[in-house]
Image (cartoon, rainbow, N blue to C red; front, top):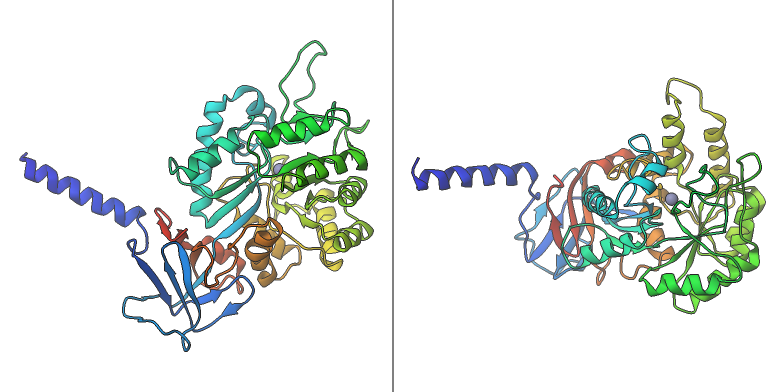
Length: 426
Ligand SMILES: [Zn+2]
């Protein structure tokens, strides 16, 4: 075979691969989008133009008012343009528990394996349209999440922007892995701390580069294995005050009403899960400006791992309780973030949470607000979550209208992050 022939073959293979995995259009200096529905972070707009230049949105508004040239515009009839979605609760270093149990991931997988898996998960997250994620705990992998974030920032691997929680804080005696003989010392899935060393542990985590502190306000350590509060309100307040003086906020895992109440009074930013939330505690959260990140998809996944055949068998009590408490949170007008605890289920399947939010009673337009502008505001992400002039050019293009059918968010045809097209999203 001649070298020219080999060259031609390689060129054809490259063209084929670009066709298979490449972006919807090639990287332009200026990206002009027309004829699509536009969700601007608040509401759905028609006849809008969106323009990205040098990583920034330079125009997002009515076509009538647009002064520029539309000669090189991309017509996106039948599509919707939205801000890059923001995952509110991920664990990039975990993978589904029906593949490998949580215990085995924490005890048997090396940091190297977990980092490499994390890089794969980060790419899948980005390709699913989530350009930012709040990653809430490395689950036994030290500060590998912070290192993954830095690797993405350096351009070593593609992935979403990450807000990393690092090791997370648990009270002594509460967290797993558990069930070993007393003389066996096992590494834990988070860092233990109590009133006497709390300040030092928080500061040490901050020194390792975390963006926020995660605390477990309750855990399954009751005498019958039930969830019960861990830290006192004063202990959580100490965490909040220590974190706040460095400009960081605190998120609390809590599924009991009492754990939620203590965390709310102590001043955390968000409560994760909230399964046992009562109307009273949700009203308290609303009054104190504490948001709920409901993680509906995690329970949905775990119950199926335990044998529940969704759609075939009746919903188990845990799912019915979750429906009730989520409805109580909506009725109390608590700010609702969107975050699924992805990692418990497959990375890249993040939209599953949004579908269940609609299934459990939230309107699809409110779900879109949660996963864009509300998450951005609650997480204090500057210039993200909206399609507005001067904002960072993170946007996605999906086929169809996600307000009519939320699952259309799965039909991602292009992801743009800081103005750059993400490959492999068609
Ligand atoms: Zn979690």
